[in-house]
Image 1 (cartoon, rainbow, N blue to C red):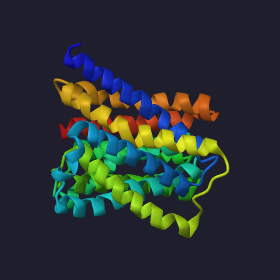
Image 2: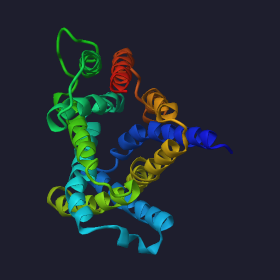
Image 3: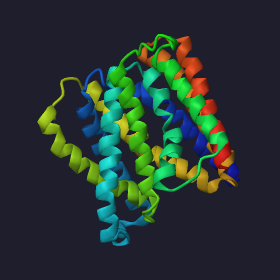
Amino acid sequence: MPDQKKAYLFALLTVAIWSTVASAFKISLRYLDHVQLLFYSSLTSTLVLGILCLYFFGPGFWRLISPANIRSSLLLGFLNPFLYYLVLFKAYDLLPAQEAQPLNYTWGITLALLSIPLLKQRITRLQILAIVISYSGTLVISTRGNITGLEFSNPLGVALALGSTIVWALYWIYNTRDSLDPVLKLFLNFCAGLVYISIFLPFVTTFGFEDGRGFYGAVYVGVFEMGITFVFWLMALRLSRTTAQVSNLIYLSPFLSLIFIYFLVGETIMPSTIAGLILIMTGLIIQNRARG
């Protein structure tokens, strides 16, 4: 099979899996609290990433890791997976999946905003337009279309969903300063994050759970949202002739996600969600073109 066809295959597989994770979050949170979900999914993803490191680099992969890489991962692992998913899962706990998912997709806009003070990047008029359009979409979703009344469906949930984009953007900004292979880097980050969540969990909840469905959901999240899907996406980018040929496929994910949310979670998709999501994705497309 030609490399470009393989790239499309890996990209579409990634999009298909990422489209299911919002439903997986919401279903799992019926049986686990958000801290338990983070612990068991992080534990799973750490094991998966460790196996991937063995597969790609062999048993001696630890020799590729320097003390500086470990120190860097102590910060990066605090941001992701610990803080990012702690905030995101709580947002999903408070909001319908159809609201939390598109709000979280504004991280690309948040990244552009934070790059101004942290990376000293300049902002263009086109990027400003993208920001206005995307955040108008978040307003439509979070008020369920009642923009003039400014009555938010769940103010704390909305704040957490948008707050998670700040954590994710900070993670990617600081992540660029570490030159370690992405798979090794992610494994180290999750090792550090697992330590943080293991220390934090006993103070707020228990390790035990009553329904196995929550555990199975956490395993699914750990394997696919946090684990192998990242590798699939990397392979798609590496095999593709150009990044744009596969990266544009990611815009399918939030719309496919609404279909899964409707059938698996049982939420009735509101017109305001679709309208707001279209605005958010339009802003992201403009932002990517402005950056390109």
